[in-house]
Image (tube, rainbow, N blue to C red; front, side, top):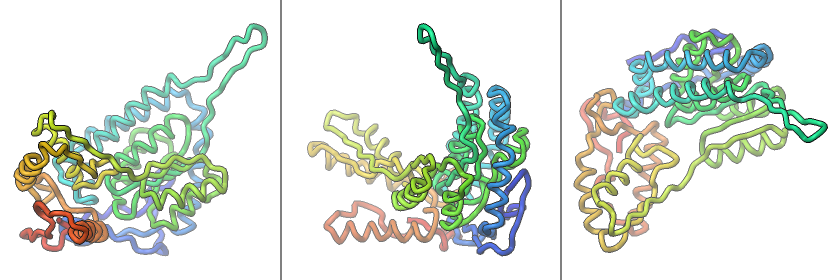
Length: 366
């Protein structure tokens, strides 16, 4: 199975490659096989991307907001038209079940582009009557923005970061997670097809050093990151040292509380959705479930029964309900957490082992 893109990076409206970059293998989580080989961005690629964004941004900002919005809405239409192909790419990249990627990933990115494509027309300055002198405000684009994505919702996050930036007249250099580099390239192609001028949305691949190079670049005015708290601390520290605007979307803890007057089946469904959707890899998942003592045992009993019915397997099979974890590192971390829980006295109600699935023995399943 191969998913090799034309090249590793998309800069100034075209694919480019630099063989000097560090190898960046794309691993299919269901089998552990390498399905594409990309290269991390060298300093030269990074500079080309930032310069392309800097050069293209002023003319884009001068366009009427409604004209910018029209291009974003056109891109949203293309995303929806190609949803099946994009869902397959996302499943190959992340390992998420295709029954999920078909409804959640590219569709939510399209919704975001459509929303900002419509909303931007209303974002204008205003005049304020002060009874004599008057004041007015004028909205100005920041310039070149950097987006750094996460691996759980790659194309959704690329859309969430690029749509508002582009709508307001900015340019963007986007670095997807090194674990899931493919769908951002597909989004870049779609933007170009929708009529976005070259240089306004650039994709560069790489590890943490590439992200640091983008965040620290003097031309970059704003940084938006989705990732872990340790990564956020590093990015915010570097951005702050250069007085850059920064937005951090980091990890969280989201408890569920179930009282004894709850509809128990609905509550169990919510707990399962909040913990098993995307194979449990969402920052807002219900990572703690508190159940009132009066219904605790019945809740756990029914939860076990329903959990055992979850269909795990080939993520490209429409009948599969849960796929593998995104990487071996993530797999080992989750298995390690299970062992820590057992050592600390927690009772393992079901599961906890590494399943052996025919044809997917090398996959990162739990």
